[in-house]
Image (cartoon, rainbow, N blue to C red; front, side, top):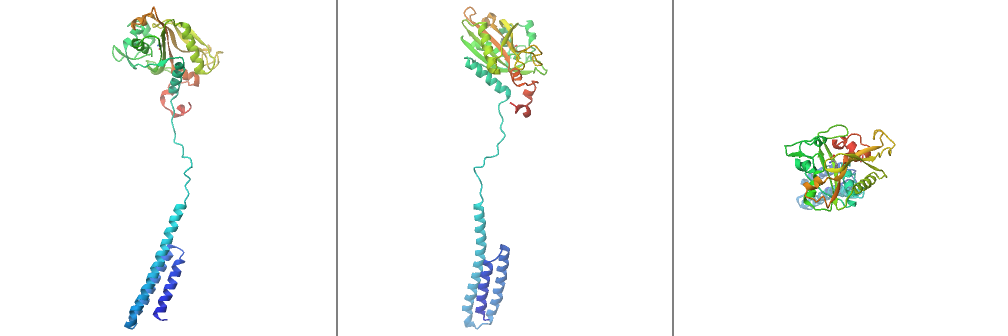
Length: 336
Ligand code: PHE
């Protein structure tokens, strides 16, 4: 076989073999093989008569180019196939994402907002006051002077002789009456502090205070508001009992009892067999308090109440230890 025919044969065989290669590895091996076959063939070039050499050199270069082209073509085909496979990969962008765990309002916050909502429907607006309060707003103005035995009802954290952590939300009554003229209708939810600690008492807890001052307000209005609140909050027709009691800032004063929401009044463990549970204190504003707040007690009367929100939530949801509210254990919190 002369050199030209040999080059033809290598070229034909190489391009066909590379095009049919089974893998990149095979193609590389074939490329190397034919390259070396071409090199061997080229060595024969030196034996040709000088006049034939240029034409044969061109022929050899053509074969080399064909080999490189076949090899590049094969690699290019592989790249295109990989790109096409990449593009053909289907991602369903409409698939819903995995849900991120999401919190919700704390039970006490829910109860507070609900209580405010119910009272706001009756025309009460929210008022606020500081948790670090003066002795005067907390006690004196509410007709509980220093050394009055009624101070013992509320075991107090004193920060100094004049400053206390408020033991009830009632100082907000005073702050409101000092800054607003009647008619007044406010509710004041917020934290209060007492030196108390047992399964139903915590050194910090939450109350909601109510105050209405206007001409002609009576004890009957108080009772009506409380009955409405209890039946809305518990979504049951539960009755309310006002049991005579003593708070220096109201006269007459009462403990507010509601019909037990668990047994409906027949007596159970929760109500200790009595059918009633205490939810707060209330009464008609004492003229002494009006005097401290510069409100004319000849013209105006009012009622006030204070209820524990933890107690409300306990009764409605069967929470049996006040600590659960504050521990932040999600197993408890998730339930509400
Ligand atoms: N402040 C009283 C308490 O915390 C409750 C109360 C409020 C009583 C308003 C009467 C009127 O015990």
